[in-house]
Length: 565
Ligand code: C2E
Ligand code: CA
Ligand code: CA
Image 1 (cartoon, helix red, strand yellow):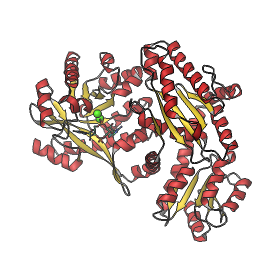
Image 2 (cartoon, rainbow, N blue to C red):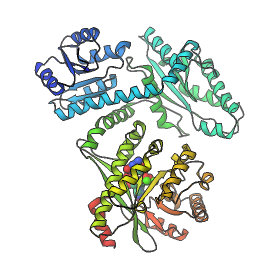
Image 3 (spheres, rainbow, N blue to C red):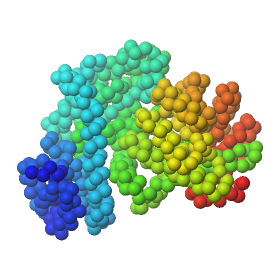
Image 4 (cartoon, rainbow, N blue to C red):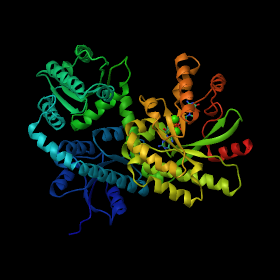
């Protein structure tokens, strides 16, 4: 018996089954079915690894099949790829919402189809690896499963909450439900400022309040740390009142720091979805308001659905994009106010998507930071920068150091320094030409680890910038221990400097501080002449911003550099 993975192709049109079989011949053992019903029979008879399903079919269509698979415990980890016609956005969205991992569009393009399948399988493998890593954790949780309850608060723990919520919704299938997800803003700060007992008191009190309010109407659980969730019939949820009561309860504890809860609500429109994914959606709604003190809760809505679909698109297309060089770098000059000359540049990545046009890094970088792909993308960017620098050097053209962004994820990789050194060697460059930008929040997250890695970098001759300086909360305090060469002041300060004396004063203080600590400063996000004047008055020298230039494609930057020389 061969041990190739098994692919099940479900389509009523023979031509499609034949085509797809040809694409995957050799790689997969192929099974074919002509409708959902036949597919279910095949699935029951052997262990299938991936299902490709046409959505529109007689007898039992693709949607019904996806629903049946996502509903059944036996098939939850079998990935499904939906097949749709051209311009069939609605069906695609619906299939993805129901739990398809991806979709492919007819007429089939063999490269795209193969890369999508590969991508889905790779993601699955990633998931497995994560699961394996969590194995120990899970054993512990397994034990807790029997206990069912969280020791601190007495609420259901995560697994139990998922299980109980699912069976409640099943038992009352005619009723519409809401999943509400709660999170406290800056709980970490509270834990740092006060003792653990205070943090625990907050959690226990919140648990008590939720339990008292929800009573027998629904289910309450503690998902992790300061995250809680409830599952409740929609007509029993009075979210405004609930939040108000929660605030009052917290205030009655008499803690000097404001304890603020935020909530996200997912009205369960798709009962087939596993409860953890319902919680993810509620969490997503929460993230939209978190930190916004005027609105403390939000519903999951179409815009978030679109965001989720966009995120799925990003994850789906990233591999191919890297292979096909859809990513490229732009360079934004940094000017010195005294000399009016370009002293440096920052490399910023751009994605030229074949269908969706240019996508901003603000959209895809956070997604890649979550799934780890940023490590490979950054390395690609660094290499592009080296390529540029080497070409300038070889042509005797003007040369300035270029700074690159280094995602926090690299610091979990042992070979970061090796990689950079090899890169420089390959392109015959020296470390002073490649400056490294590390965002402030990475330092606050993991100060010891980062400090020790950075020391090694500086010993090799790299210069380190602290990016987005001033956007975090504990930075001023930590700064004196940080081995940093240049502070890059967060855009927010410049944008307020004209109208806010406070921002002005903070900026002045930052400049004095950097001077005292012997650090350089770059001010970012400068857009107007009045801002330049203020900054010049404060003694700032190095400026990056639209006032001088937007980030430019490499050839344009090269021309600018030549004119400037
Ligand atoms: P960042 O590192 O803080 O980069 C500066 C951002 O500010 C860039 O946005 C730049 O285009 C923009 N900017 C520059 N001058 C001005 C101005 O005068 N006004 C305004 N409003 N904006 C200005 P961009 O290119 O969209 O990048 C956004 C973020 O994405 C970056 O913020 C960085 O965090 C991330 N990013 C970009 N490229 C990379 C990369 O290659 N690797 C990693 N890890 N992250 C990257
Ligand atoms: Ca940066
Ligand atoms: Ca920045």
